[in-house]
Image 1: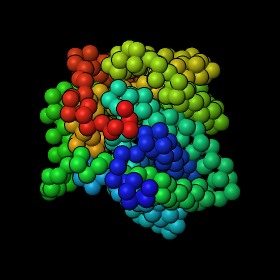
Image 2 (image 1 turned 180 degrees about the vertical axis):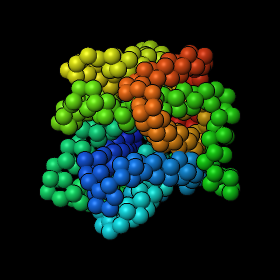
Image 3 (image 1 turned 45 degrees about the horizontal axis):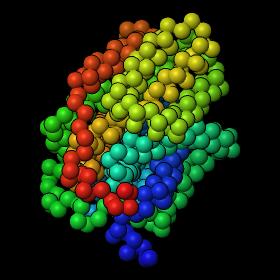
Image 4 (image 1 turned 120 degrees about the vertical axis):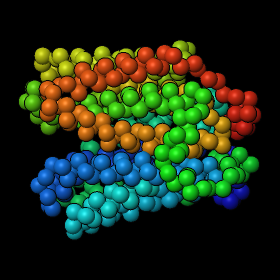
Length: 414
């Protein structure tokens, strides 16, 4: 079968999911490989800590603007072309960052990467395309596994390469992105046949992320799910962004200790994604497991805030990371079951935009309350926010896939 003919039919789910997982893993590795060296590269041009945080804020803001449009575009032209463009854009951004030469070039490179940062959301839509409705939660674990493993491999490789040259991890991230481009082009068939694509033409309002978010918020039940998702990400990203500073201030923790903690947390998350979700979610349901995950996260945040010794952070943090592993697949499935097959890409783009916005706002909030209220306040305040999200989620009625969705599922996935 030629690439052209294969791209117009539904791919075999196992093979397609395997390629998608590797692409997502490479995406996270490429992003996290910069973490150990980005602050040092910025210091070549500026000694302000704000300049380092702006790299993240610029990326998140650009992703917020572009992700909903990229999601809509993938509903119309297919997942494969959008994935190719997004991953290639990331490669350009990484190489620009590595070449550098001025601070504004670093900012432009992150802007490009953010604008083309629709690869994870498009990959999520791809997973929906090739999954039976009852298998979505299990298959969504691929995203969590990619994040868990990526946060183990990326910083480790970045730290090792950074000992040779600060620029080497950045160029390695660019090479990784180009490898992913090759995988998509040669091995990944299209998952969205033409007869299942959105046919309405793009409008000017489609370039407005708020319009896409507003459209999804008006879907019955979906607005509440997106609100819960936003509240969780806001508190989670805020507490995570400040945890290193908190560990340093309260326990005088060393970088190696914090690094070990992050690696073990990544392992715990990956284990849950690989082993437990496929067993527990079908048994107890997405909503119940999402509630368990958020309550467990809130309790973990309170225990971290109150821990009297740093060694206690390890068992608390590992348990917290483990329950967090249930969030992404369960919330993703609850949301996906609320829209038609023709809107899965748009929904995935909105999810990415919401997560990106919270990734920018959460750390800003955490930094302010850490400085102005008290060290550790992002943890107990974050716990309250997560419990509020739980109360809201309790009122959500679980939606099952409509008959239209069921009949649109790929035959190869049945």
